[in-house]
Amino acid sequence: MDLGLAGKTAFVTGGSHGIGLAVARGLLAEGAAVVVCGRDERRLAECGVPGVRADVTDYDQLGRAVDEAAERLGGLDLLVANAGGSFGRGLLESTPQQWADTYALNVGHASHAIRCAVPHFGQRGGGAALIISSITGRKPGPHSSYAAAKAAEIHLAAALAQELGPRSIRVNTLSPGSVLFDGGGWDRFRTRHPDVYAAFARDDFPRGRLITLQEVADTACFLLSPRATGVNGADIPVDAAQDHPTAARFFP
Image (cartoon, one colour):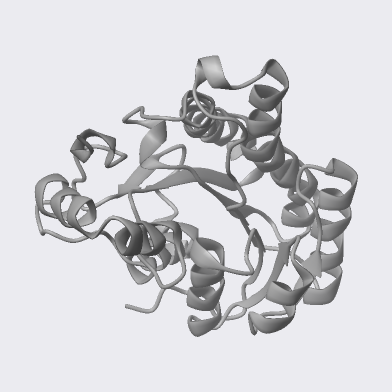
């Protein structure tokens, strides 16, 4: 299927590694032009995709990065708000500031990136934004601040789909489950706890394996494409019917 992405322009936050880089490469393979952003200059230099350095929690930097990407690309059609993470641990092990920082990194960055992209989308007659949320936003697990922020991203996309729809701008979320890739968190977990990892993959995934970067990227490319113009305000899980968001219950 031709997704109709050839000639489209895209900006991906947190795009120098992991899911963000996989989505950027998927868009490139479909014929789109892409600029990514990230904080790590080495990763940006080595990722093979044109990039701009920015800390997405510094909203001035983030706004400049969106504008720079649009300038480099000659306009902007697509935006992927992928950067995310958490500060602190559980409720009793984290501070109010860490909760605020987690919200800023996830929900705040996604909303501001889309806000900054709207004028550029308008110059192209519309656009599409995709927020990368998480299975944790639908099936809560530790850490609570991260789960709450990811749930808020899902609701944010639904609200923005209503608000920006009259401007011909679609907004959706994609919620990956546990993704296994070389050097990623689950790859490190598999090395440290092979028995627990094996039990997690066997018992929590009907197919007996975690999902791949390619599976996430393929779905992201479809949701961003003209083939998905009827999909707006939706949260699309890519988790292979994963049962629990963590492997904590397998520890004695």
